[in-house]
Length: 141
Image 1: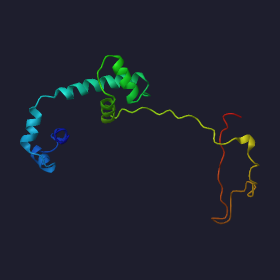
Image 2: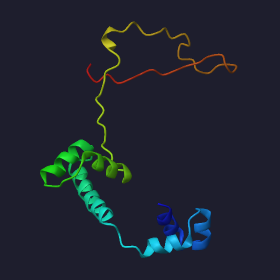
Image 3: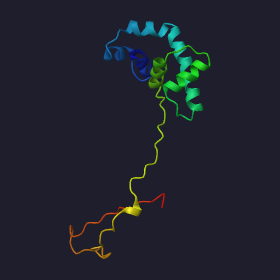
């Protein structure tokens, strides 16, 4: 992670200064740059691409358990924890559908409070009258 960060900033700052700031050796950074990508990293990148496809196909609703099941059905040998880790690392999250809940039954409520201002909202001094709006749309009425 540190080396990738250094690489991302290497066009704006000197590598020696970045390595010193992050407390890593310059030789270690250059060794990392010349090292081939690991097999696991390549597999993770390919698996992440498949995860993104399944996530998009599910209209971004599926989480890691369902995507894991889809991957297994396609013949991919992978654990659910690895799928969850890759989804977290790549900011892939399911959209949680929220059910509409009726909080007020307007047919059984008491009478509204009396209009003490009689629609006269202009007052002669501040802090004389306070008003509020508590209207709502009744979807089932």
